[in-house]
Image (cartoon, rainbow, N blue to C red; front, side, top):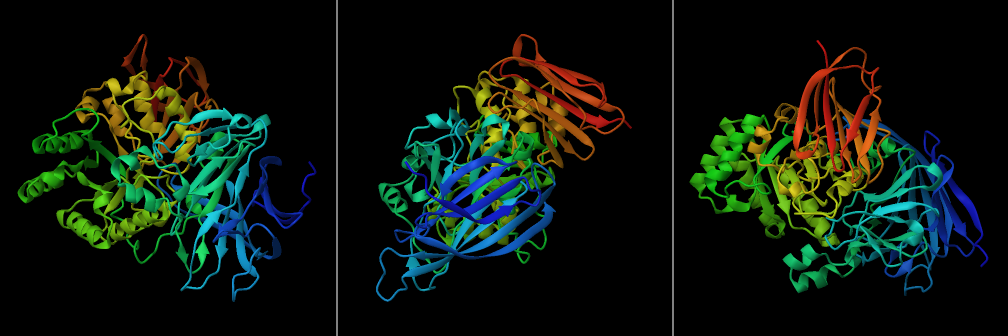
Length: 621
């Protein structure tokens, strides 16, 4: 088979020079792109384009010109580190596409823009198709992400919506038709590095899905086409399924979300990438002029690990949050059955204890602006600080619009948000900084996984690349399955969630031998270093700094291993060390030790299968 002739017409390099995205036109006018990392192929030549009303604008297309631009900015961030860095070179490429069939009274060609970016932490593109404000058109996708032979991919399907367990496969062996929920992570061959594909700035559009073509490619598809998940089948009516399975029309101009490739030579590069939220619009200064009401923190939660589901039982959790020094208490739907007098009593008690209250709400009761305003008015009047909104379970445009309206109405009333039953984050936490976290993850709400240790050592390099995840970490009872107590505590160090909701009954946290360390765990970090020992699905070893203190958290996968961890990230001088490690022979026990460490002497760890390790390092005074 003769290969198509390609002539590079737009060549874009990141400011560092390490990442490139090139656009070309195949013989016959088919637009194609490639992406490279350090000179090695990350995405091989792949089709790119948007489909509008059934017409693929990436076919029969000519590049008519390009306008270059640059981005160089920093801004405060909550999560992996305290400052996001956005350094990119961009090109707005003018495209003119000849129609196969000319509608009556319409031009035979369509002019549109393919916006490209090459950033120091990835590459991205989006489509902008001008339109009449009174005319509705239906967009679809024509882009493909084709990985080099020898790559390994990690992905899960849509049966649980975004609550799935990633499977590792050789890309050459992925069968046609497999669905993948972004982000899909790729280890490139021959040590070239890593890539992960997802989206950003998902507004007024359907969410991005991926489907394998059986030839190392994953085609971009939209939310209406995704297989209907079990949670959606369970909670919604057949007419809802039918409606959301129909492609959504957009009136006026069409601006797609960014199709994002997170790229890095190392796992540390991948985890510290800011590209997903960088591509989202900045917050509206009129809405977020003051941000003193947006406060990350730790929370207790009565759901997974016992406690009476009564007014007095739930109220007792607020007192336990105070004892732990935690900032928040997340209350499930039982509050909706309380009397007004009980609600006032509950909130008064929380105020006296300086514990902020988050209330759960079913998104199906918030489908209209009137319902949303009434709920958030109630939260504001009660003194509630946050809302946990649940049961979306789909990412057709109608559901994406609901996320956006909930974010807008909650922001007006200064109520923070945690979405559950949710899709992947797409940079919303930049545009709407009061969204502290969202689920969209297979977490401890699920009673079991085939291998929690494998799953937990995969998540930091897959799902968490898209943004914060409310996994509800740390339990000491039967839900932890094969993982050890030290592994469980280490998840609170390794997983990122500015609202860090602990799954354990708070009394078990207070009674745990590691309670001093647990009390000191933050929910956001100033700096993160992914340690070289890390390997996807095998071990996740993180060093994270808050102020002058460092925490090292290690999650071990299914096999025992010995690790040597260089402490060169520490400053000069001695550090007081609070060590929490597995007790020999008993995964349900800990050894807690205090000592002194310096950067000169490495940590040498002997980790059990599914075990863990944590140390807090504070400069000696």
